[in-house]
Amino acid sequence: MAESSLDILVVGGGITGCGIALDAASRGFSVALAERDDFAAGTSGRSSRMVHGGVRYLPQGDLAMVHEALRERAVILGLAPHLARPTPMYFPAASAAARLPWRVGLTVYDALAAGRNIRRHRTAPPEEVRRAIPGLDREVPAVVYHECRTDDARLTLEVARTAHLLGALVANHAEVVALNGNDRVSGGRVRDGMTGETFDVRARLVVNAAGVWADRVQALATDAPRKLRPSKGVHVVFRPGAVLTRVAVVLPSMSHDGRFVFLVPWEGRVYAGTTDSDYEGDLEDPPVTEEDLDYVVAAVATTFPSVGRTDVVASWAGLRPLLGGATGTTADLSRRHAVYESPPGLLTITGGKLTTYRAMAEDVVNRAGVILGRRVPCRTATIPLGLHTELGGAFASAQTAATSLGLPSGAGRRMVERFGDDWTEAIRLIRDDPSLGERAVDGLPVLKVELELARTRDMALTDDDVVVRRTRISTMDAKAAATLSG
Image 1 (cartoon, rainbow, N blue to C red):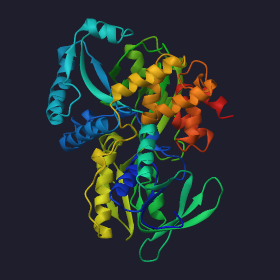
Image 2 (image 1 turned 90 degrees about the vertical axis):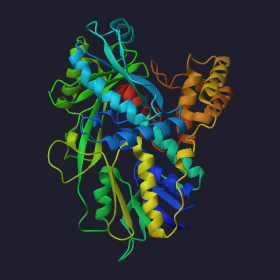
Image 3 (image 1 turned 135 degrees about the horizontal axis):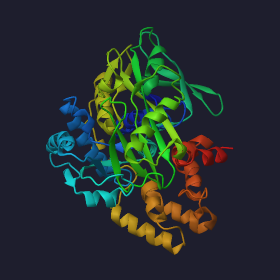
Image 4 (image 1 turned 30 degrees about the horizontal axis):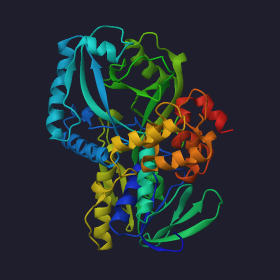
């Protein structure tokens, strides 16, 4: 980066920053990205892990937001089918009156999908619901619709890797500590977090995609940065067997705030969330408070009465970078994004959501093209993210190879879901060293080869990079993660 004169320097390695780097590189701009911690270390690795169509925005009447989310969900499903997996969502309700608002809203939802829907919503009879949710405390029908489950950190990483393959220079653990220039921002000073060395990076335009830290980055160049209003979202993970469900479940919160808690099966466990509350504390590591835990567990316990706080094995908290200046609760704030140039040479993007990252990046690079005097059409709707073959064929080939090596059931499918085309590299490494086919931690599905590829393929530089974001061990079992991190 320091040896080049760039068109664009992107600050922030979340899903938006990585998406901007990919979009810019694919249009022929010279671009670098600097992330002070790790890719997806902030909000992008602490979300609900859903690529969703925005059904929660229907009651707010934000049909444009729903339409955009549905469109982008379909795009992501096409670009990364190994990372965005369709998931049925069940809303159990005994009375027709309770189901009616969902049926009405989802009818609009299906219409807005306009041929891009995964499946149309329907009502499941009580006997089907009992099979899908064995732990349900009552025999009731349910409204069923579909969303996509993902690993948000891995999706972010694959966007970063694809940007790199197209020529972008990307670096994690590289903090922009100053913005250079006088009347116009013309690059930044970057500190290597592993060595402490600093470098000046020249760029015609700097893009601030630092998420909840965007105010801090903008403050490097102006005394009057715009103010964000962070909103905290908390998720908790329950031990295997605590919540008996084969499908995602939508439950009303017990706080009478009109919100819902989502239960999602994942890696032999179930996680639940999320909260939505104003936050004014430390941006680096927002805490999961007793109140947060009570909010989520109470919602789950109403339908699964045997579940309690002792069943929680891990949790995470993330901060939404919502646009400030509004009154009312954070749940009522728009998830739309905003792009503005202030001061000259510094383009900042705030707001938005995981599902619409590609559209946000397109908006930013369109603006950058105008500023830089080079308008090139966006190409990212057709650039695959880590998988270039048909998903079913990849699953079949990988499972055959995994079985021949005596690996655990489902290991081949897991390698495709984690590494896309590079499942072949995972299998090769295990063939050369059979110990890499063993489990990294007893009782968890993570194989030792994943720890190896986290470093060699996925740019992990620290233990936290590996256990928190590359393998997710920290949110499967917090105690096991602490052991691996030393």
